[in-house]
Image 1 (spheres, helix red, strand yellow):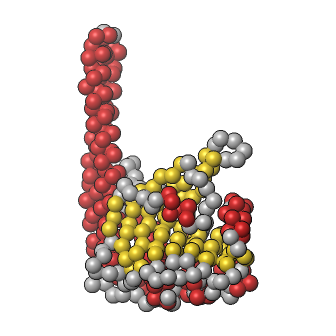
Image 2 (cartoon, one colour):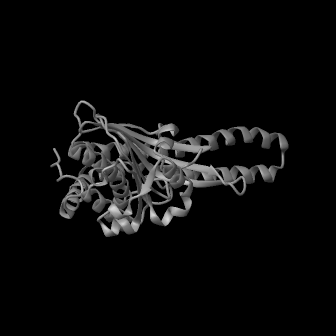
Image 3 (tube, rainbow, N blue to C red):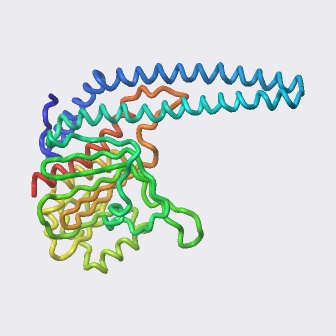
Length: 326
């Protein structure tokens, strides 16, 4: 069994040790699966190459004979064959990610304070419900375009959690175009006991895009609490709002602040969080589909897998830290 790391955010060497453990796990477990999928990718490319030559020859033959009836007759099998090729490409894409994600989750499941009776579950087609996304109060959006995939659920300590990739868009108030609201990984966790207080943090550099959400929270008696944040780098990166009855340090611990700062600084990604009584929400931005396989280049990349691991691991560490300190 993988050795359990020190509590989230406590020491830099703990994070490095965990990453080194993941590197070893990658070499022994994930890399062989990537090699297997790489052989499938190369076979698929060879099939596409020879199929292209064959179909080009068939089209030239049709053009040379210039017989309409023959062209119509050949169009049916050629169309069916093209559909078959598209199906093979889609199958490769749909099997690659679940296979790799399942292995990553096995590693995470073995190294954190998860309930053995509630192992991590993965559903590649499911997503976080829109109602939960809106209840977070982080994003003020009706979200006419709301898509997602890669749903992960489980229990860390005493807290049930769920997360998925989301892509959310909103109608522009100026024209009818859909503007991006959020794209990345979104997590929701529920604390098992009653808790009071509300806190929301937004990336300071994204303030202009969240003025409506900030105004909505101030109407609910939320106030700017930047002065209560002791970490200067966290204060520089984030806007922190909370209601008067909220003990900010009790919710947003110093180790959590430091770990979030390090993560955002090293990755350049934006992070959002809200604590609404006993509900916890966290979101990490991502401008591309995570772990989507390439077709015309190799997928044998530790960095490709590491990015997904670090996104998921950070959100789970937030839930674990809150579970341990409350």
